[in-house]
Amino acid sequence: AIGQMTSGLAHEIKNPLSTIGLNAQLIEEAVGDLDIDPNERTRLVKRLGTLRRESERLRDTLTDFLRFAGEVRLSVEPADLNDIVEEIADFYAPQAQHHRVRFRHETARKKMPVRIDAKLFKQALLNLLINATQAMELPAGAANDRPRELILRTIDTTLDGAPACAVHVIDTGPGIPAETLAKIFTPYYTT
Picture 1 (cartoon, rainbow, N blue to C red):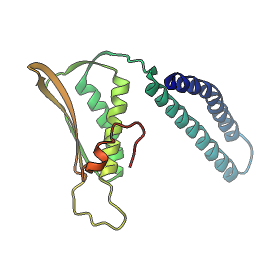
Picture 2: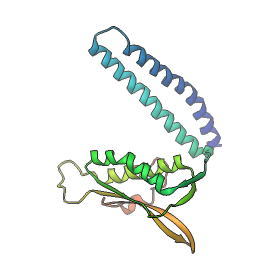
Picture 3: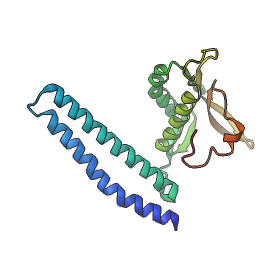
Picture 4: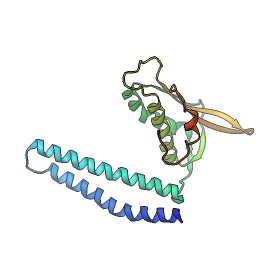
């Protein structure tokens, strides 16, 4: 019942939210063309951009709720796991550099064919990389006595005697405290 209610509510909110986002984009474009003070135009375009981005963020949150309510539909297709990991590594490298984290990725030497929902897998992998980077952030004023490294790696392995592959995300952060470890799979739990 909660799943059905969540799903219905999310669908009811997503429709007007899409309208808000689209109109914010159209207004942003129109304001950009107005013959007004350039500083005022820049300020208004910036605020409208924030409105549009926040409506997109809210839409993404609603999509997560729909997934949690059982609305997720996997789109499983053949792919090469190494290609997916390479793409995420290329995408994330500038973010790691921005946070002064040494980021490297290593892929297995051979093709790693998988059947996977590449979009959802990339999102999960990206979340792990972001969490790892955040876990290595130093508190204000803390001495930088620990190397800040992040490794993304594909592994050719076996599982119960059958060929398998794995992806490792390794960081030099402090690890997860025992009291937090029991809660890591609780939806939206965060520290």
